[in-house]
Length: 381
Ligand code: SF4
Image (cartoon, rainbow, N blue to C red; front, side, top):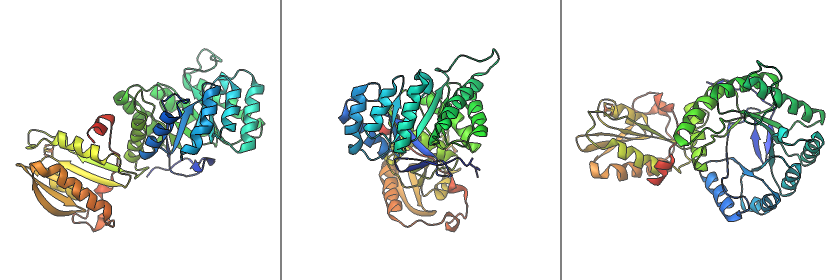
C-alpha cells in the first residue's frame, strides 16, 4: 500500500485536492475557447470519462468572456490557464473560474502578479504555480540542474505568494524529461506543504506519451507524491483521462471503471483473442463501475484468470466458458463470445457485489484494477 505525502488541502470548485483526498484526474480542452459549443461539448465528454477538473486556455479577452458562458453550462470545476497578461487572469476570475493556472515567470511585473493573487484571495480561488522546463529563468550557476532550476523558480513564486498571505497554492513542475520531472518533484515535496500536480509535459502522441507519463507520474505516485495528475498527450483529451485512470488503477489508487485482463495469446490460442479483447475493451470504456473482465485464450491460465475476474471467458476449441463472480455460468460458441460476455457484464453491473474472498477460488489476486479504452478502442465501441 502506498503511503501518501499529506499535503495541505485546497478546494477547487468543490473538489478537494490534497490533504489525503484521492488523487484527482485532470485534463485540458483542445477547442478554441471562444467556440462555446465545442468547448462545452468537450468538457461534458471529458466528464463522462471521469475527468474531475478541466483546464481551459484563456489566450485573449474574448476567451475570458467566453468562460462566463461556458461555466454555467458545465458541472466540473474549470481552471483558467493564463500566460503573459495578468488582466486575463482578472477577467477569468470575473467570469467564474474555479482556479487559475499561472506561470508567474511569464508575467513580468511582480505588481501584476500581486494584483492577481490578491484578487484570487478575495474570491478564495486557488492558483496553480506551474513551472515548465521550457520556460524557466536562466540558471543561477553553471552546474544548476534542470530540476534544481524548476524548484528554485517555484520557490521564488511560492515565497512571493506567501508574503501576500496567500496559501491556496498548488504547484506543478513539469518537464519532457522524466528523470528531471521526478527529481524536481521529489525536492519540491520535501520543501513545501502544498498539493502537487503531476505531469510529463509535451509527452508526445498517445503511445509514447502514455508510457512516458506512466513512468514519470507512476514513480512519483508510488513514492506518495502527487495530489492531481494530467497525462498530456498530442491527441484526444479523453485519452488523457483514460490514461490517468490507468495509471492510478495500476497503483491501486483508484477503482473507477473497468479493468481488462487479457492474455497476450500464443500458438495455443484457438480463437481470435486479440479482436475479442479490443471489442470487449471498447464496449467497457464508458462504464464507471469497478469491474474486472478477463479474456483468455486457452485452458492454460484461462479458467483461473476468468474465475478471478468479475466476468471472464476462457476460450478454446471454438467454445468459450464464461465465469461470473467466480462461478462458471455458461458455455458458448465462438460467434457468441462477445455478446454473451457482455450480457454477463450487464448482469454483474446489476448485481450486489460478492466479496472476492467468498468466491470459488478463494483467491485475492483479483483485486487488481485498471481502466479500459484508448482511442483505438473507442472506435471499436
Ligand atoms: Fe497462450 Fe493460453 Fe496463455 Fe493465452 S492463456 S497466452 S493462449 S497459453
